Length: 174
Length: 259
Image 1: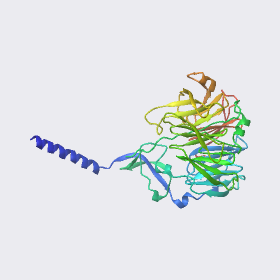
Image 2 (image 1 turned 90 degrees about the vertical axis):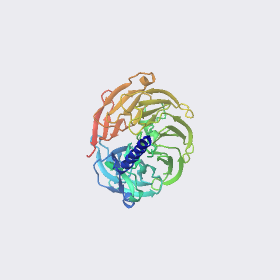
Image 3 (image 1 turned 45 degrees about the vertical axis):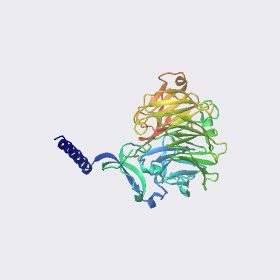
């Protein structure tokens, strides 16, 4: 009898294990939004744009450079501080930070560092790209959050940003 | 399930006035020969002929003596969780999730580690004046999830080889980016709770409340003092303020998110 109960218990336990595996686990978390490797390195000066995710700023003479996380740098003329005026937007996918010296702006663009001549804000010119300055180790998880996230598939390109999502059977957690 | 290294660290070193007087315009400008200024959460800074950029684990040195033709001059491996970088005199202060590293720039092409100040695992933007560094620690969400810390550590850096904790101050709100005006005023962002100005002397004397004034109604992530004005950025947008009356900080203008 004891043996029977024991066997039964084992079967139930095994059963519950199997059952668990079949269930779909739904979790709230983050999923990566990808940008193709070709698009990732397309940088260029554009007309002024609205603030998306204002991140960091660099102050230079009467200019203010505001980084929009992941998308580019807003160039703002602050000659009249009561009326700061956006004069250009430099589209730089993946950008986090920027700094300026002698009229040249430097910013990160995924693995690369790019340089633009911003001495004339209405005629911003691309100057140079230094490849492979940065590793991509921060690409593999949403660094601003904890919890579940969809694992990164590097064959899909670079991670442009992370967005909230309902995840099925998420395999990555931090 | 693997746990990744968590923790965001923001190190920032605020104003670096060469003289220990109030961080006035002249000393702010002299700090940065490029004529510009980065915020306390910077990951790229410029000093002299070099650009220094941090990634998660290392410091990149880029020769920009000819700004139009920059070139990578070297890489210095540092550690994990590197987030921010700040130049002060001939030093670089680099923030990681476990502490603050001090590097010498006596050879600006090859930064050399002098010391490390270890603290609890936390987010840590930093600013400094001649003798003190201020590190903000916040242990919410990503940073050290299990504790709830709102802390400003004041570190004696008179001997950069041996940074020493002078005291910890406990602000009411989570502290983020910050800037410092000489020996007297500390401006600290508090995220969704705006920003606050603190009296450094009161902090050093151990006052539990060293607040001078505060501004709310904005989400403040980083602050820069520049040309006698206050520039603030955060999730809600960009703001500039007149703080000539420190008890009555006035908004000059703003550009909001989606604007």
